[in-house]
Length: 471
Ligand SMILES: [Cu+2]
Image (cartoon, rainbow, N blue to C red; front, top):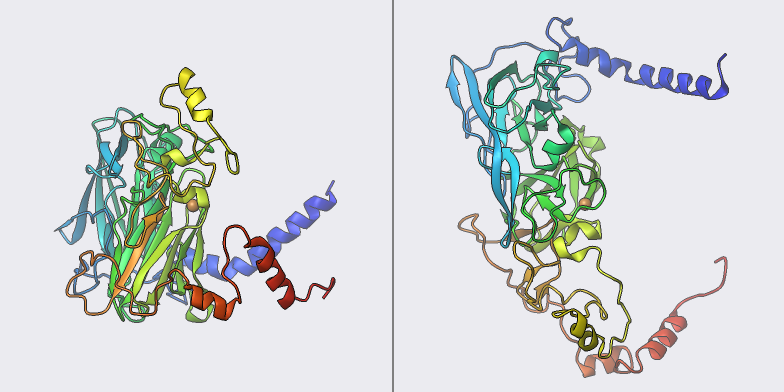
């Protein structure tokens, strides 16, 4: 018996299958053994249907190498026309930010693994050596590879046992921003850091090449204060949020010269959460989704891009607005460090001599948060060994009350190198500052104080607003 719900879901599947038909056919045609596609580049332009031979792509000639802030690019050598890479899965003593280290699992001594970079048409051989105490395997996330190279342990291949080295070998028939990650004991191994970015440049450039091409991978961790091992079975309550395995102030800035074309490739392999990444001072266009090129007319402009778990999103813009610009996940708990979660809510509490009394029972107790939590990083309170305070770092103007998945885009005129240029010098008249009494009198008609601010400000706003209902 076909229920009403079943009928509609079947109809929906049929409709979407019809809509996807063209794309699916041309994707399949690009598979080895498939029919040559009548439209070699298919709808996205990212998958080459042709099986043409290309020499190994060369950095500087065939592509401008990407930059992995706080990370590196995996070296390769060419053997018999193929690019040979070697990933070593192993335990890594990793620093998230000054003051916080933990025993993670990564590749080649790094968390996350180094960025793999190649060119469309390249043949690659990637050796994976397992130095972990348990089985592993590597999945090439988003890459169109033969089923037996897809890396899902048990489904597509045998596990790579401790001490074993497996060989993955395939031809890159697409370009774009992809990722790699463990696909054996996924929950544990991804939570411990076993992932990296996989960038494939187009054989022929699409549009102008960027001067600055950054990759940023988001993740999240649970590291209980004072411990040195991320808790891999955590499901909901992450307290260390990272770009390329680093939490602010451990994140290196993204530096660009005025006028540079900047590309940022975001990838998210957090265990559980999506990240809306927001850039100040600019709008960008989303040029790639999951590695597939977005046609120019459909490139959504914006200044926040949601990067869901398992997704990559690539954005581009011209760096034409000098300054120090925050770029961060907009989930407020994702720009806090370890000690900022789970504190009792004391906002508005008048603690009196509570701390003094509690100290009789609990030496070292402090009452915190009654006036907000912004000042807590700045106070320089002693924190437990191997932990980072809830927020921040000293900035040019004041303490920066941010942590976690937060970094800074630094755009400057007259740069001689892409090293960190320090803090931005604001041109005269372009810096927010304390208002003078004279300005307040002229523009507001009074000088607000803590005592009278509520009433006069409300009166002033009432005077300007039409409060009619239904208007
Ligand atoms: Cu987030």
